Image (cartoon, rainbow, N blue to C red; front, side, top):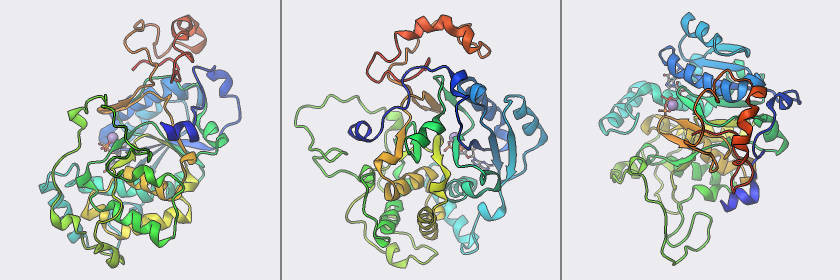
Length: 401
Ligand code: GDP
Ligand code: MN
């Protein structure tokens, strides 16, 4: 919270008229959707929500990517749900799967073991490929080269508020690089050694923290994440939801000691895990609005290559979320990050709802029908007005979570 107040403000409070906003100058940006044919229903759900809450006014293009070929049903169906330009791309083999310096049999064996250990998605080879693709390759796809910004969309997401301003324009204006809606803790057994390598990258490149790295370091006993001393007053914190509680499972010795990488990182492979440790925090990357030049920079390329060469995308099940987050921690400062706290957003079981959203207090349909045009929705305004701008964190527009 302290960091947010100091470095980052909500872009727009309450609702604007999107019909005016969309006529302002635009950014060179697109939605990016990685998906498989079998996920069509989930993708439609997502597109409907994106269109209904934002893109019916702003008409940003979509780029759909797949390691296989999209079939005609997928392509034709998608076109029914948006009037924006849509492109479908196939991911080239060199951006998906094992690089030539990895022995696929060794990698497959490591993946099989992660499956046996019941590590979430650990035993699923395609998931490892997906994470590596989103970590080091999506921004190199030929269909994305013409863009400066992207907004990531996954199957089965939902927006709860109207987004009546152009987030790309505001990211650019505020000189932001990376935007998120939700930050959560990673399952530690999926990334036991990720921090060792990220930390070594920082050290090897003589990078000094610009203040963001500390957000990913486990605070010492008695200290808060922001470095302040913990209050001795009795805490009155909400109880942790056991559904999202971290696994308390202890990690096996040989994993903590470091797995032998297949690359050129032998001295780091053997390092002990002393010094700072990862607090497991990461931006939940199924939503991202970010500047592609960050990923295309030499610094990010070096970071990805070092992480990749450790073998952690196979020996462990590193997600692209902690990779993006730790790269940001190493290379960016808090002021480069934007928290879209005004975007009501849900993916599967985790959601963020702006604090002022009047959940369950709204009239049902037809007030929020898909098809109700903005200018016919003035009626709603009196209903919403009392929620807008007047409360602390009163930031969302017409949210219904
Ligand atoms: P979760 O959100 O971590 O549970 O993972 P998902 O299953 O949603 O996968 C993340 C994203 O990658 C989604 O956009 C999926 O559609 C996509 N994805 C995952 N695996 C594959 C794959 O093997 N091929 C393709 N084309 N997309 C994939
Ligand atoms: Mn998903």
